[in-house]
Length: 252
Image (tube, rainbow, N blue to C red; front, side, top):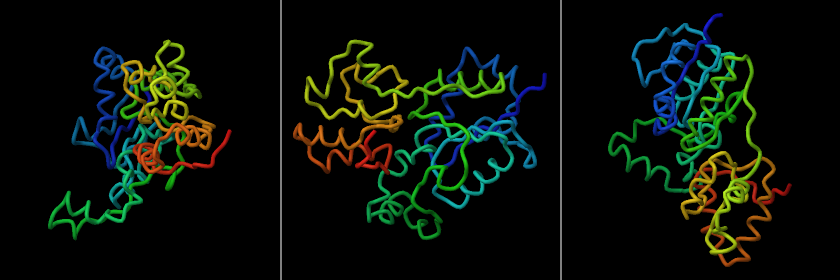
């Protein structure tokens, strides 16, 4: 059986999603035995520019012409394009200030005098430019989600994805509800589950790092938060931290 050929790459991001692979320490020998990692700039500098792949697993938002060139090249060279992590899927933290008029000021704060020569545009998710075959959300993604994807690729398919909110996992763990019982601004009702409610189980509100759950009742969540006395600007600031473009009128 031929080994699937993989590309693993990052665009505008912190590289934390790619590190999810390297954190699969016990499984790495088997992964390397079952796959060809033909393109992985984080781990090796040499690669064949003409290589083709069974799947490209790519993290990060798009914010520069170089990002676009890399994404187009990997899309054209790969049978499957996997958006890996919240930035790739929704824009993530990279895009949280897209609506701010201070973008150029922020650019100057990062690059200083060299900012005049930096070509960039507001960070955007992959779907704004190319078709995406599958996505793994999370900031960073769960190790188990990556391993499930790799196992499915070996079987010639793609894994199922959860379609329930973080609140479902909170209830299964019998956690105290931080929103209803402690009146804290928790986004669990509209955020994609799959993290086993790690933050709420530790007494920390869900900040939304996994992005919106499918068919989230965003309008009802917004109404509930306003009813409980939270400021509208603070709600939007929290919700836009990982997913800048919410439809605040969306109902199931």
